[in-house]
Amino acid sequence: MTKQGMRYHQHHHKNFNQNMHEPTIANEENTVLNPHLNLSDRDSIDSNHNPYHVGENGRNSSHIKGNSKITKMLLLTQIMAGLQFTWSVELAYGTPYLLDLGLSKSQMSLVWIAGPLSGLITQPVVGAFSDRSTSKYGRRRPYLIAGSLMVINAFILIGWTKEIVGFIFDSSESASKLMAVFAFYNLDFAINAVMAAARAIIVDCLPPSQQEEGTAWAGKMVGIGSVIGYFMGYINLMPIFPFMGDQLKALCVFASISLLLSDALLCWAVSEQVYSDEISVKTAWDSTIETFHSIFKAIFNLPKPVQYICNVQFFAWMGWFPFLFYSTTWVSEIFVRENETSSDDVRKVREGSYSLLLFSIVSMVASFVLPHLVTPSGTGIPLKRIKIRHFFKYPLVFLTLPKLWTLSHFIFAFAMFSTWWTESVFQADLIISLIGISWATSMWAPFSLLGEIIATNTENIANTTNTLGDIGEDSRRDSISQLSSSTIGLVERNRINVEDHVYRLVETSGGNSDSGRIDSGTILGIHNMYIVLPQFCATFFSSIVFALLDPGTAVSNDNEERTIIKRHGETDAGADSIGFVFRCGGLMAIIAGIYSIKLWK
Image (cartoon, rainbow, N blue to C red; front, side):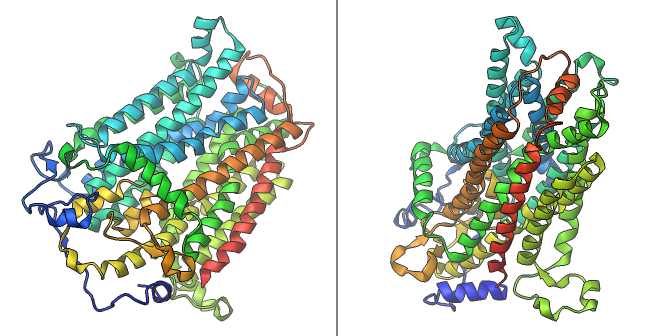
């Protein structure tokens, strides 16, 4: 336990008996207790009762094919690469595609509400319903397959919108816009459903001792999927696959195929446990309602360190959301202004994808390098005591994870303010590549810091529950897998037990004993809300800015690349509306950076 964790423990858990030992964790062959029964019900369960049917592999546990650990990890986590490929296609081509159909930037920004809306709704709902699925095919795979089919359906609608609308409505422009908006909402909700199921499978299939390694492999697969997706978006696929029509259609086809292959490989390699309906005490709907109720009840009673992290995330994501969705269009507009031409060179609409390719490469490299540079929290030296020799000894004794997170916010802010004087694509590429460092840190630091707080308190509270006896690992993974996919990696990394009615986590801020304690799953759900809600704010703000500075008008769809360039060219003589939104995001990053200094202590 770090010094920081010890201080936090001493402040919030003075009444805990430090001499009590942890309960023994049962192995996977032992009886699995239902995490949704209360303690008295648990005591009355016969020791030979098994709430799971025998799975496909003839065992009472999940099973992964493969003769080595590396093979098993690859087969289990490769789904993340296929899923990230589909997400990369949406990020790189979504905004230019909507502009091509004739949507103004203000209208287009409202379409991206689908992202945070789907994250807020789909992930917890899919998690709650799949937890109680009694399908003979497993709890997660039916949702995984159904979500993937929805993704493919959305890609068909996106790639062939004009053809489908022309066949039904005789090429109605309004109908094309409506179908495109519907397709993107469909895509976002479907991707979140697949993500929730995929993350849950990873948790279900690995014992606590391998959860951290599983998270690391999943992160590697996400990085690989991003690089492949942005690379294919950058290269010109038409000379290789001319029969596919255009670049977007080709990407939709390849994204669909990659997701199907990933699904098939995962379903072949992994045998899930089959849940028995005889232990379903709560309905999925009751569980879903209870989840949302507990989140809203506890949102104003967070422990101070958790509240600090959530506040930082709120301001940070006010900056991240515009960058992720509008960077492609921003680079394309710079390319047009720099070259002062509207030729049919398809590189104009692929420049943004190339920039995101550089971004993903830097981010992936940083995710491997940065953990080796950071010293554990609570062991670093003060900044005023830094000496030259400290820069040549690794890990850097002065660089703790909270300090690195603070630094990443200021790097992002510097990059966003640099858009003010960016005049060439080369400069834009440098800026977006630099942001890759901040992105890698943002995908790691807050979850690890939050996990340290949760793991510390879970360990302390577990010391008071030794009278409960053995607790099955499957029950632990059962409860963990209920959390949303956006925060499940945190749980995987820290191997947190969030078993209902047994492990109640941290006391509310201020140490008021009357206010009760907040369950760890509730804390993670609230943290996810602090990531999602600022995206709504950023979306509405962007819509207003685009409406005022760059209203735009519809342009005929004579040629895909030419039309996109025409619409980008509308801003040549006008304001840099996207750059203005970026700089406002940089201001939010400065606020996040200043606020994150509170986590240094």
